[in-house]
Length: 209
Figure 1 (cartoon, rainbow, N blue to C red):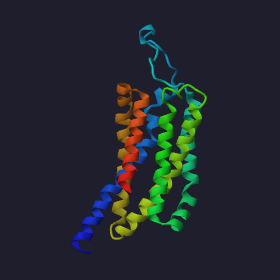
Figure 2: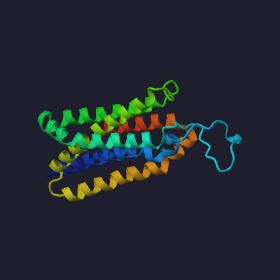
Figure 3: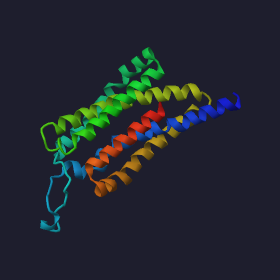
Figure 4: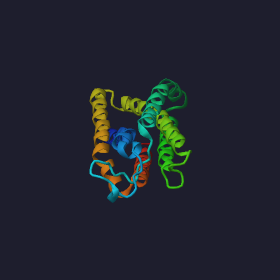
């Protein structure tokens, strides 16, 4: 392998790291924002006793609906893996990468839209959140399959090291989410945080293509 090809494949590896990082950052946004999603809007903080949680931006989903959002992602992520692999073989890597990341991006967009001022607390909010999580699950599983197949073709001699790197990167996505997202939400609000998360994810998907 000549120097130009070595350079190309390691540039590919750098950009490939963005996708698992972005996917797993967005997957666990629910965990980082659990208080904001589950809790009840409590109004003026000054009216509360010290043992009450002040949450002026909460959605009031409660534990059942909150867990349904996690289940929606997990079930769709599992269900889409096998048919996703079949269609990847049929339509090729480039088309599959574009399709799967577009579906996942639409999922994050729907989730962000669901908490905008005109929709939050309405009957449409939770169905939009649920559909957003379904689309995120449907897109991320096949997208990571495409990525792994491309990496396997480019790094046949170092495939285990490359896959290990992908595991490290996706866990960094988890950790970064729990370190950053709740703090950002307390600073700029829940809705803006989810919009920023969506924009970052879409940018990562565009970069990884």
